[in-house]
Amino acid sequence: MKKCMDSDNLHRRLKKIIGQLNAIDRMIDEDVPCEDIIMQINASKSALHKVGQIVLEGHLNHCVKEGIETGDSEQTIKDFTKAIEYFSRL
Image (cartoon, rainbow, N blue to C red; front, side, top):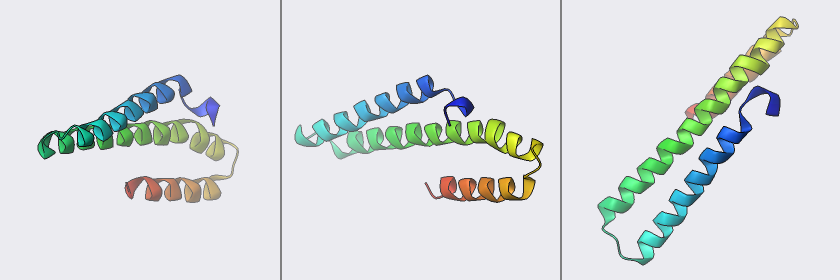
């Protein structure tokens, strides 16, 4: 998996999301207005969705491409279809 994506970029993004989630948790304790909390929740969801897009793109550009080039296109397409299905459930 590491060879098909920029793990440093993903780790950096995930740490930022963890920070956003911790901030939301603090906001709840600090009685911050609901609209502000919802805005931060939406920002976190968007950031997590972007991480998923990056992983999916890496999978397509490396794993799917390699699977088709090595002649295992049917199984590769099935696996990619499953990955898209999981991603679209977010």
